[in-house]
Image (cartoon, rainbow, N blue to C red; front, side, top):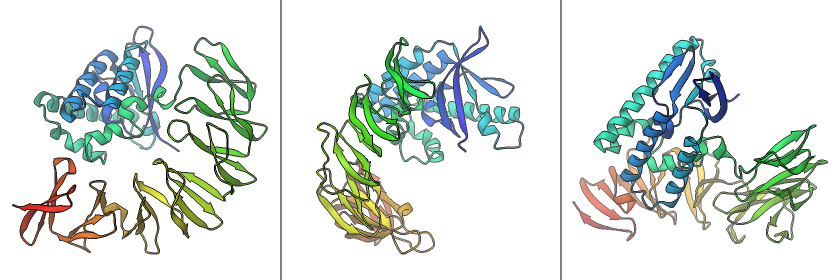
Length: 416
């Protein structure tokens, strides 16, 4: 069971809860702490002034923009605008946080837990306000560490945050101009004015993708429709998944328990052979399973790794791994197909497109190592290491000497 925090609009005048705008798992997201402003407690419910929260959140976003030099960052600007447009158009003057689901995890009285929640929120807001007033983002490093982020850009860019937009319920769904309605256990589509776009004829309709496609089910077979209710992929497949309508324009279709890849623009199947399974990764690569063997194909469906006995998982945009015969170790591969070696995933950190830092395993090793994408250990006795200049250079300390290693030129440029 998932334990969640729910945020609703609330009218102080009518004393009525409006509608849910957020649902978060366990904790308040780091980006939205300033939104929870001027708190009040009534029993175990936490109430916040919406306008004060919007003002504080604007200051925080402006602070991040300046500190991270995001003035020309297209996605940041786009989603920030969506965040504040949505907040300012909300109908009620207050927000209410219901943490009952989380409070139920403890035997401690809910009212007491609510007081503790309030204290944590206030403490974090004081930290943020202090960092903003001093213009020093480093003062918030402890907040990053608590949430296991390396830097604030990673917080903004995380797929579950999307610069704050996906922290709202509306941000979880594409195409809010159309919504799915139910009538007599069947589903159809309506627009914002409640006008029927598609009568309720389907057994199920999934959420729409970025460019407006939804999987539908009717009489135990599946297809795709668009936001106008028009059929895009015929409702004749045993199952459909991995619908990508914004980058590679394809989806995986199943028939008689076997999988193929379909071109969404032409409706044609891209393989002459049907496979046991097909998995699409977020970087555009594809894994195909044929009987008990697995292969990785690139964006153009050319094989880069063939007939491997274990399935692959993606570790990074350019790196895959498989299970190994050594407990906790994984076999790592570059997306070109090069085998990189066998390592603990928890002790790897990618520092550029060309290098991975291997941290020493506690109680077993004492040196850092630097691995390139050809699977070669460039340095294996690094006592200390520092990253500099947005990972264009690193400082390595070995043999009692600090040296500057240029990650682009792939060489030591000077000693310090």
